[in-house]
Image 1 (cartoon, helix red, strand yellow):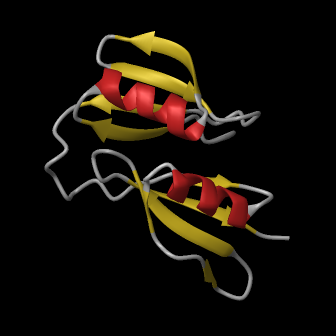
Image 2 (cartoon, one colour):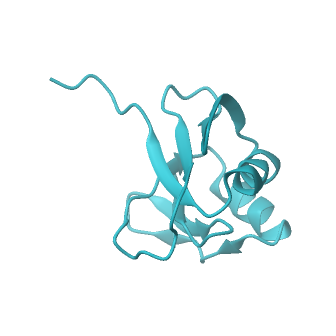
Length: 114
């Protein structure tokens, strides 16, 4: 029935401002620009991130993307040095990970595993 995850969608309060943040801070690139939304490419991944302008006051949207990195400490330090709100590094015995948040408080996660 399903072949792959096509995208992750996050609601942002200002799509232009958010798009600039995702590009400048996370290094994503715009692969498609539509009215009120942007589709952003994440490295060489086939799964893009879509940001859509809308109401960010709702706590009902609990979805978030998880980004994989080969150097979790470098990613953590890089985001921290740019003033991004980040949580501490965790290890659950298999995965190393940390959460971070965009300008609208959307939770995202970075992970590394062997």
